[in-house]
Image 1 (cartoon, rainbow, N blue to C red):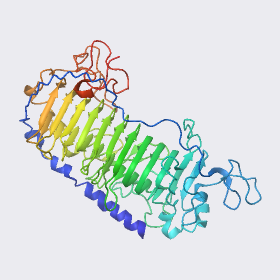
Image 2: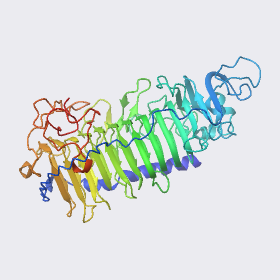
Image 3: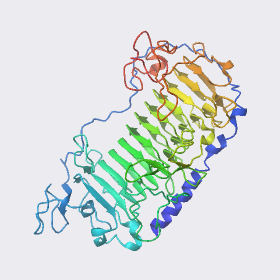
Image 4: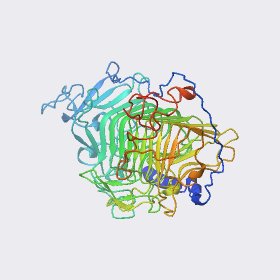
Length: 583
């Protein structure tokens, strides 16, 4: 009953998300976006501060699960159970005898559902390549926490706390320290709540694993993909969530492929100092990373996403094949955010990430109202059906590509029922809250929603939006095809919109351009195509946006010395506008 209540609570919370305050922006801003705030600030600040390193990653690539502390245990398919093998050797069970120096045959042996864990805090569990069924069935029926009447409880207990942040408990796939070319698969069956449980877990590292199931079903899908036998055993070859966590700190998730779950890839809140690096969260039926947990949601410390892909969430995933199917969103009863949270704090950092083709908002931090900052650096957000990036509070967007083709799912073979251009489809939606500072530099933005940039009325007297070296490309408004998208619309009466050295084209009310003395109001000549799965936002060799942006180091170091692809800037006679520096 505990899990059933939790599922009901989660459904209610997600339903609440479908009515979030972004719906207040879903008024016809196209009829009111007169851009009355025309403060054409002509700031030509040429401060050449040379501190231009915008990369906030200070982590080493060296593996930290060295085994220099705790005990190392091994899992391999040809191992044995706890009576047959000690788990202390990476060797097969010889076929007879007890307490042999050989590996366990399943992660459940080290962390048994409802039983006494062999793996202790600070220990290391190395799982060999192979495929491991996670949930009720076969040998799992022997564990005290596994019962066909409550099969959703048949899962590993929370991973025990590590000894410290520098001496974590490690759950890793073999090859974690050598490129992770063939991660072991942990696949859910018979509807376990999650495959990895980090509830209350501190100082933990999980690395080099594929977490998935073997079904294309979606939790509560209103079309043909609803999961069978949700309340009766046998449930089927599906789980609910890949990774679940609350009240957890100092956790590293690295080289994980979390995909194909009926509900969420990650369901986690009240986190402190989490890092996700080289993680893929894709094709999960409701949401990718869901931070809206039961009770208080607020996070603290630093929540870092480095080289993370969050894609195709709000879609089922075919098995086998891994293709999107049955994509749905809120009107049809689903959800669809790539990443969303409840009210939260923390410093959120997104670097070198791809947040694309989710069926609602891509990155939704609208409720980041509890303090902290948001950093978006070298991020591509494209083809999400709502807003590509939605933020609250102090935000810094640099070297990013924001492609607001919010009608991407229209007419696609994998689409069941998606709300195209939800919340008016504004490419960027910015809320200041109590913060006074939002900056955006060397970013390329395209949109077919109401506006390329919406700044809502949540702002104070000192709110300032600083825009430098950006490329803005508008198109026909999908929801109102009789007009083009607008450049920006502000509901903040006190806003200082400080824009310069950018290039704007294809938007309505272009008579307001230029906003700054060094703005350009013409076609930036991106290479295209502006269609398909990946819009070409690079600059053509004949682009008027080449070599005439604000210099590297200007604006107290805001202008970076590398571009979206981490290639050097400038090349040629000066800095190019937009995310790409023509090499």
